[in-house]
Image 1 (cartoon, rainbow, N blue to C red):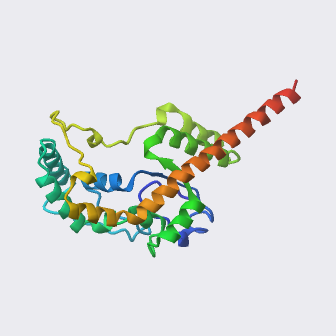
Image 2 (cartoon, rainbow, N blue to C red):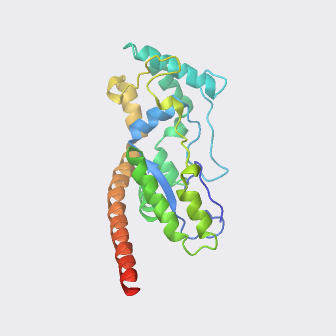
Image 3 (spheres, rainbow, N blue to C red):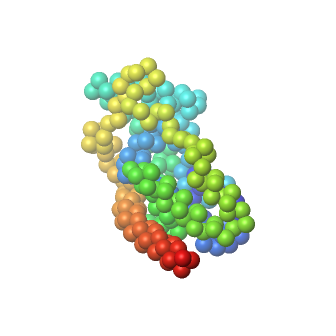
Length: 248
């Protein structure tokens, strides 16, 4: 089966032929409002959808993504001086042009066909090994362990294990623009939802209402799955100790 490691939604109609019958889905989650504002900063243009059917929005008032990010950086520089006018203007335009990309993005990812919160929650519970952007190290450690456990009988298990654990293969894909300063050292503001005009606050809360339910359950799953990992590790250690004792 192919390894899909990009922004595609969970399309269950692909299970059993393009993907395994019960695939493992690794995904990180963060506060939905923070995610929406981050998408605005970076100019995210794609929402959730089945492969081949993901729609791309046109960023308003610019020719390309570089122009958009330059516009947002300028607005954030001015916002750092306590003037949110240009920042909110750009945000309003983005939410108008690219609403489909940010409208309850987690729900779209988990149920791209009907975008039903209940279906999305079912898929989250059934298929997703949850990570948290607030704890990426722990998330990556869990995903590595899962991959090693499930691939232990694969004919290329040794190669897979090396690829997953060799530090030389690890790279950072963090966007440089996550910093609070641009390339010139100027401070970039990251206004919170409470600093925005009331109409924008209401719009953002509407566009993240379903995602808040998803995120709440994802946080619970992160804890529940963490307990399972601890029990699994404890069991593996006990088995290893028994094997050592029996070989003495």
